[in-house]
Amino acid sequence: MLQKRMRPLLGTFVEVAIEQGDFSQSHLNQAFAAAFSKIENIQTLMSFHQPDSALSVLNRHSGVWQPCDRDIYRVLRLAQVLYRSSSGLFNISCTKPLQTIGLLPQHFEDEIFSKRNTPPFLINNHRVKITQGHQLCVDGIAKGYAVDCAQAVLKSYGIKAGSINAGGDLSVFGELQIAVFQQNQHNERQYLGHIANAAVATSCGLATTSHPTAIVDPNGEIISAGCWSVLAKKAWRADALTKVAALQGEVVDLTPWGGLLLTPADGQS
Image (cartoon, rainbow, N blue to C red):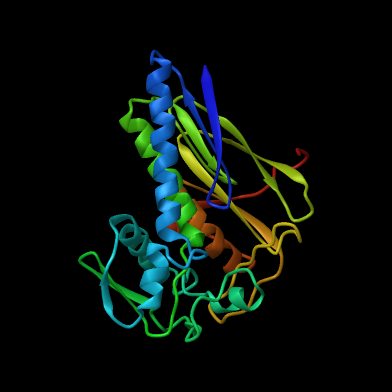
């Protein structure tokens, strides 16, 4: 039997579901609490919106080497690998265009835009050096990373099957299958399939006036509206690859990065 808990985190509602098995209710409650605590910790560390977050502190001191938290370092390392392998399509320094339209706050006055051929940051031995005048926003990968971390926490408590859903960033593990739907910019709910022991993430560009989001190309242009859902082994990868899918153009091939673009099944919704 599945037990579920939900909390407002990561700018959305996060639902954690776990298979009860033979565990006591006290043990299950501890597992839930630990998973949510890990997600909340990542939110506190990596929030671009909070001027006193660990990420904002790093942004405030661009141009110099700074020590950084283990989780931030891991996210930056993953982002750097994808930045390089996608020739700059995945770029966590594309903050200026989003600040211009009011989707991100402007904490500092010396922000400039990082072009594709300008590495936005360097990392080495748990230190980071952000290119002078730039800012990093990890919203396009951190939510998926938080989901992966929560799953690892649940497994450390011996949980054999479950799922974590952070507003469309979904990871499923164990003997559990979940139907996945995509709600597009027209608020249409479309069936994508069932997933098991995998993750899926969906990103939409300027989807609705009530929940606006945007994806920025390497030249700082905001792309036209659309929704992209990606299947991968890890939620961080699925999350990040939705942005690569959005920027690849008409022919989308995510296999070099371990992802698969999902499209709505014909005749099902």
